[in-house]
View 1 (tube, helix red, strand yellow):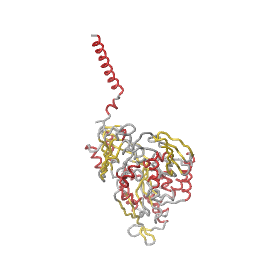
View 2 (tube, chains in turn brown, purple):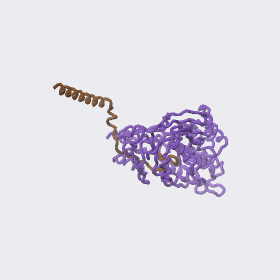
View 3 (tube, chains in turn red, green):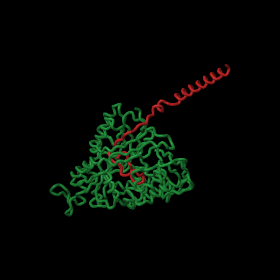
View 4 (cartoon, chains in turn cyan, red):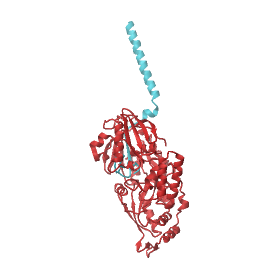
Length: 63
Length: 456
């Protein structure tokens, strides 16, 4: 009986710690961090690059 | 603008011609090979000693190369003290490339580059798109975006439609006329900052008749820059007040409106002084020759470049100067610009002082030894006094002295005026409102996409 109580106590404690960790995570993760989403960004530009080699030519995003 | 370290963790100026960099440890190129001092040395040798030398070589001043000290320590060496060294190393052209990839791919590297950045190359379909994707092994904060697709849409109206229909999330070089309603629409976000690019008309001073300064000054007086800004650029740019933008170290307000106001009568008087007289059709003649200029123009490379060319053509015709325009794909125009000899009298072009230091413009564009392909003196301009001033300025590390020398050089150049600067850019990017984290940079090459995310 004693061991079961200890187990229950340990289990309860573990659950409490876990719950606390979740709360801490929610607090530390700012709304912006939580919402940062990936996906594909599509950019339209007027011209093709001449080269993608940084030493040879620009890939000027405005061109 | 502040320079911040990326691949270099720290640096130390160990001698007037030597800066020692400690590289960030455990960084890998996208192909898994390590970033180290040997890769930096390889990069410099490739850029400076390749055949032909890389574009960076024409912009790097007296930087001669990199020397390995140990695996993560490298010295950047200059031929003489060079004030803009750090700014030069921060240029987009100074990216460190994977030696393994270059040696494996050879000429194909320019279509499939390998670096160390937060995004890595996926695909380039010519005249259609370039695709990059997140580098999951990046040493720093991982980019939120999974992928970026750069689509080629030459017509500005079509770019705006793509944004409105959702086919695009971001527009580069948006149509100026479309901006006012977008400012009021919460579905979109306008990102604007004064840029540092100057767009104008370059003149080949080595080719008659533009070897005559009176003819060049006449052309400047014949161009109504205000009309171009008001009617073509529609508020999307600001009038150029010098040959460099105000944000550039060493730039001077050359007061073009006072020195070269729009004045057709003055233009005609200068041309008459130079010996040109009107023919029966109004085109000027001299010694049996018509005053006909060959005029090269890009189309869509810079905001309203071709429209400016057409407007200039009409304005020059009003003073008896005939022009024949040639245009083409940017790659074709660019090839001509980088060639010698250059056969055109005029070119609607642009220059970005990419390290925000006057050296990158005044030396690279006006020194007599910087004719393409070595440099970018497309004008073929040569003045020994300007040569001496810009050489002295780049050797100095006293910024006040450098500024004074650059001011004097610009005072000489403005009298000989090998170009007609028209506008300074306002860098404008339009996005859908759900595009977050984007900050437009004065140097258009820096998109900063590693901090961008999508709130949708």
